[in-house]
Length: 499
Image (tube, rainbow, N blue to C red; front, side, top):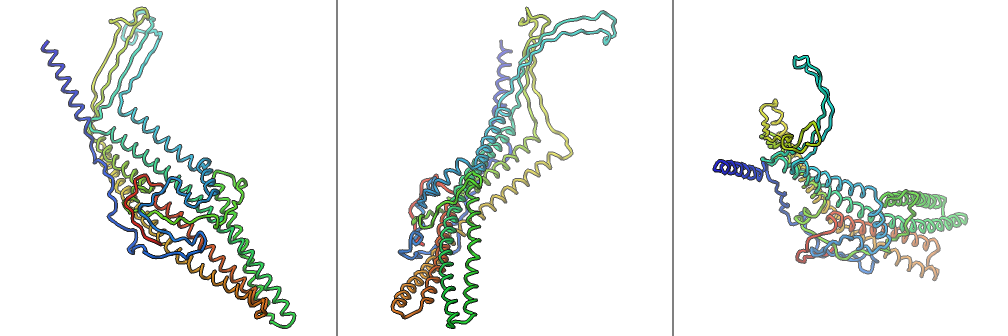
């Protein structure tokens, strides 16, 4: 009795020791990289009072950066365009690239689950066989008649690798990091698709307005050319004046095919983004005047940017996986302990198959300790360390480029307001000049050619204003994309600055 208790105590001690060892995992535990110690994206503060020209249409709104302004999941609704909303919804449903990102995430999750089953749980297998054999005693040095017999076998085998040094758990950790990486890649795909559709739609709207303004400008210049030719026939102007106007008209007409080609390419891009063939996507009837420029723009601190941008989080996941690989490399240098066992029955007959005398079983412990591999394991560990440094440098590069991306967009939004103000002022002055010229023409103070020239100036400034207007919309979309899309954390205290 005492002997049994001693054996039980020994087995219990061995079990506790194994469990205690299994709680350890060699290699460094991963710690997320700290957020950059920075309060802004540029070395100059945002302007406190840069306002857009009032009464200048939708794109003339002042925009205010607000730290409290949250980004909704459907952030593109800030443009208030039903057509853009519809196109983005189509893209979410039909985009092959988005579907591929979803499938890749499913694959990564399934691979993780498979490895959990392979590494963290014992494998249990059943083996059964029924054979008829004829044996010869010649191989035993005897010349006796051969015997014929049947052999039935049924065995259940178990195999389990004790994760004493945590190599299996580090492997699972690496696979979990791969799942995180694919999850953030999917978020990046959603963000890229929605922002690309929105920006391409804005480009289509801008090109449509430019084509309309260019056609009006061509009509005005054609009228000027007609009057100039009449004046030349009457001797009022020189041939040089006619040629100059012909050149101006030809140059303007040459820009129209370029605009139409750009519009066609943007429409084709929309087709691909929404998962359609190019012949299935008609030119959307979009105009910049149908959009609304949001007055409130989100402004997030660098620490929040690191947590939110999917490309940064994906790079962080790659760094996590590389860190786990260090533990795997260390565990491969240490002893591998495997528990094995078999239990079953072996008999020549079936009627007494499950009897005690036909019962067979084995169990044992196997230990494998690498002793000499020509330095291969050491160099593999060195390569893994280098891979971690590569992942770390790539993460830092991703953060730096994300900061640049946001800084560029913030600067662009500020300058967009300045450019728009000036183009609006130029267009406003040209329209006032046209109004005065019309009044003078009615009173006979100027000729018809002066009136046409004033109309031409209005159309030229109108083209420049359209481009400035489109830039404000495009850079607003770029800001939402640069900040990483929808924010899931509660907004911080309100801090605002106006542009």
